[in-house]
Length: 205
Ligand code: GRF
Image (cartoon, rainbow, N blue to C red):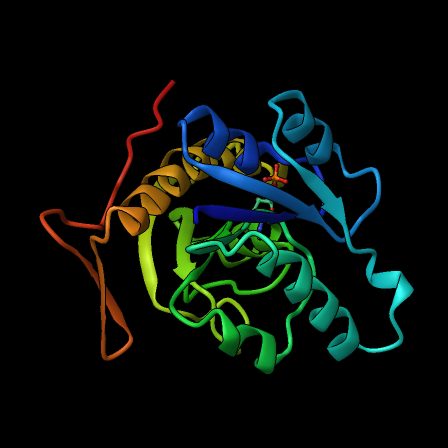
């Protein structure tokens, strides 16, 4: 009865969750050989792969994924760099118990290439968000955010690095809040019992 983490790649957010001592009962990837699987295995966390390429439709993939997740009866499903768009039916079956971390200050820049887009728009603050997953891509109720200043010399790579560092701070914190029963969703907005969820970080070197 803990957390199942879904990944597709590198797994640095997964690692942050594990480093924070969160109870991760399984890690599932849609990509065979995803680097995050090795991180989990090194820590003795059970892993499995449900390759999306083996399925003819999104629905059949999501059904197989849900079966794999439900073997662990998790309280929470945590998406950590899981690069698949999920069907509304799947999302609905984990409503209010599935979180995602996204590399922008939502609702700005949902989707991909967030750092490039932030630079192109000339935003002065950029950052990351942890949110509940809804059928509307990257638009669910926001649990926590971290903001960083955009520097004149920033590139998409340097921004990505500094934002990722903040993802590793707010994601474990948000998951802990969830597991401690401190998140309240009311009319699509999240509050944290006993804490202000809005986080702004100074990332000066
Ligand atoms: C992170 O930037 C996350 O916000 C996004 O995908 C990336 C995954 O990185 N959803 P990692 O696999 O956790 O290192």
